[in-house]
Image 1 (cartoon, rainbow, N blue to C red):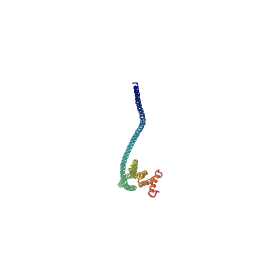
Image 2: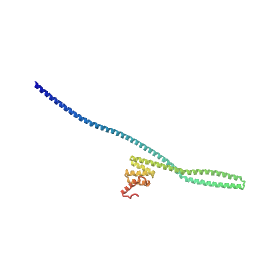
Image 3: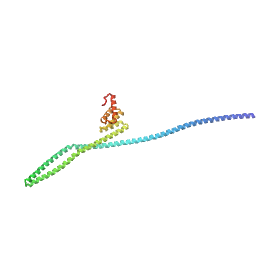
Image 4: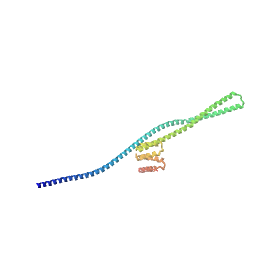
Length: 298
């Protein structure tokens, strides 16, 4: 019985050892697994922190882009408002121009009748001279009658009445003469004033078309910009800036070298020699004339 009991205890101890070893191995495996998970979690935590930083930057960039969009929307609204104001101003200028044209036509008509008025004025002056001669003659007759001591009171009274009537007609003729002279003086002055106003209006309208050309150029609407600059030089043929812009747009964006050279030549014929763009324009013309085998510009 004692031997059997000893063998049983040894077997039990061996089984416990195996069980403990398995548990230890399992704990060791769990430990290694936990170490790996902890390492993975550390890396994941670092990546998560990086992602949070990137997300924060993305939010900041999104906010900045939204602000840029709002700013661009505001600029677009401002540009549309400016465009509307320019169109309103253009309409008003057109109306004013029509009014001045009508006034100019009226004044032109009045100015055309100045020769007739002058003829009438000459006739009145001639009549005045005739009245003066008649008056002198009448005064001479009175003097003769008085000197000769003639007693013909009736004839004397007739002469006096004639003299009075001639003086009245003479005063009326002088008044009419002054009115005609004043009218003749005012008509050329009014005509010159209307002409000056018309020139000022043309310059203001040309400047409006120039500003529209700049606006369309900034918005890359080059065909419309060319149309506006052409209207500007049509109203103001000495506008060197519009000729330069026309040449530059045709050269750089519309790729129409003949038109560009035509506008640049007009620009060079008007611009001052010290202008900063003169050298570039001359080089452009010389380059393309040389390329096409044409005679270089002087």
